[in-house]
Length: 503
Image (cartoon, rainbow, N blue to C red; front, side):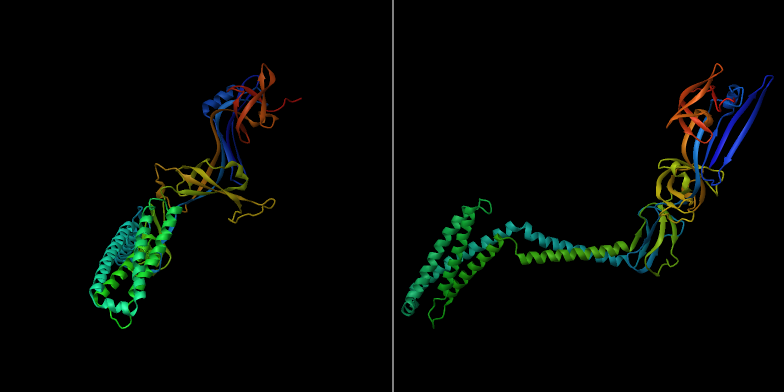
């Protein structure tokens, strides 16, 4: 513990005044913590005038009081990072060397052939675009597809009506009608009659369902109409199939028969297509479209990652601190091989004696003198206290043993310097650090020996008034081993008692 003190003592005799100036420097064996107080020559002269006539008193004087905790520090770059490619491969471009200043976004190094990687990304981007368009067709064009399916069904039904009409006319006008009647008259007539009845019922069911389409999905009326339509549709499909199979054995269909068969088949296909549209996109096709998009996106992510990892960009403004010895154009390299840091805001790691733990906290100011720059003082502020105690060799202490020497570590930031730019200081430079635990300038000071403790945190002093010692309460501020700051209760020149009167 260091304490630099300046004080003036004077002793009055009957014939003359004897003025003595003493400077006392108390040094602790640890050398980590010290306190200092400096009084101006004018204040010292004023204190000399007001000094008491014997050694048991002292005059309150104006001065400065600063509490320090002294330790050591090392300059570091808090934002130091290591950079490398994502995969192993040859270096094709290396744009930096040790000591270079770089800006955020600068290209530091490139791996392999970037043009090939860019082309692969472009191909995968096109695949993703096509896959998205295919998937969107299922979701965005549902109304168009439905309208097309309905139009196709209407055309197929119209063609079936026309084919049925032509077929009936042909049967009546040909001798084949008699052949049909002679061979299987009841079966054929029943099939023809059933198909016409089924067609009529289907038209009624469609009209009924159309009148319910304004109702929300799940409505009971709409659901019932839809079930009736599906059942009627199935009956009609069955009736058409039975009609087409009603030909007697040995009689071959003529072109007019084929036209009827084809028209009926087209109606069935159109109805199936419309049913799929109304039930939403085809699940199989939709799933294929989704999987295609997912695969395309995965391929794009991979090619983009390979491209990104093939180029090292500076993530911030900074300085190149080191390069791997293997970092040469044309050589294969794996893992980080470039280290850089932002030195515009350097930091200090501080080490103090463990007994100074109560004299350092986040926000405290620091004064720094680097070993290599003994004539220049830097300033800064403590920003973080390490919660762990350490041994002098840097090992963490889990359980402190009695008498064990401990070290407190902290992190501090340095303020910009006018004379020596901070970013020009080499990392690793050692320094002496004073942590300012408290500072009071131009305040009333009295010797600590004058304080009389009344209760915890409450003090009083004896003041000489008209030759008598009068106890007066005072408010105490900062205090070191020799002097105390008096915030209220005394004024400069008041004479206080520092020791009891001899009996």
